[in-house]
Amino acid sequence: MHLPENYIAVSVRFVPGALFKFLGIPMADFLNKNIDAELIFGHQIIEVTEQLGYAKSYDKMLNIIEAFLWKKIQKIKGEFHPVDKIGQLIFENPQHFSLDKFANKACLSASQLDRRFVQQVGVPPKYFARICRFYQAFIMKEKLLLLVG
Image 1 (cartoon, rainbow, N blue to C red):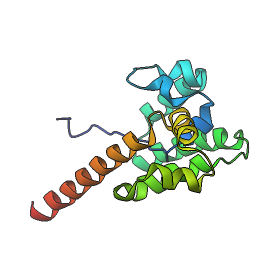
Image 2: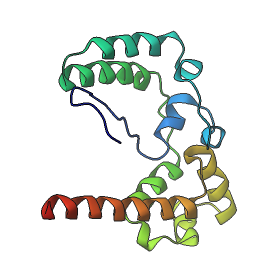
Image 3: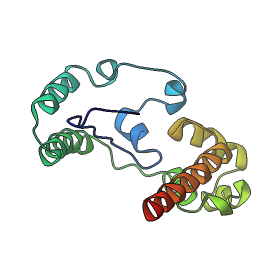
């Protein structure tokens, strides 16, 4: 991407399964689709977008986003499912992925873990591990280019 020098962009990344907790909507429903944020978050996101448009610095943008997310976090029920932790474990170390091992850790069968993972993360755990391995390779290449360049 080639952007003008005065262009500011912010990206919000959630840990695996967090967006499912926020929305309560199966993540597979979002796969390969472009969905307007207003359909998901309602008028609140319009206010956030306007505030971000007038923000003059990253710090102000981060404060706006954090305030919005904290309101959402306070509404989340304290339910914890073992799949929440499995997604993070795969993300941190995708090279050692084993469906049976992770299903055992979650006290689920492999098919139950697969089904629940698709609901919470959007893709099967094996595919998620592949995405994570690619992401790690991308980050390593990016760091190498920074060192060389």
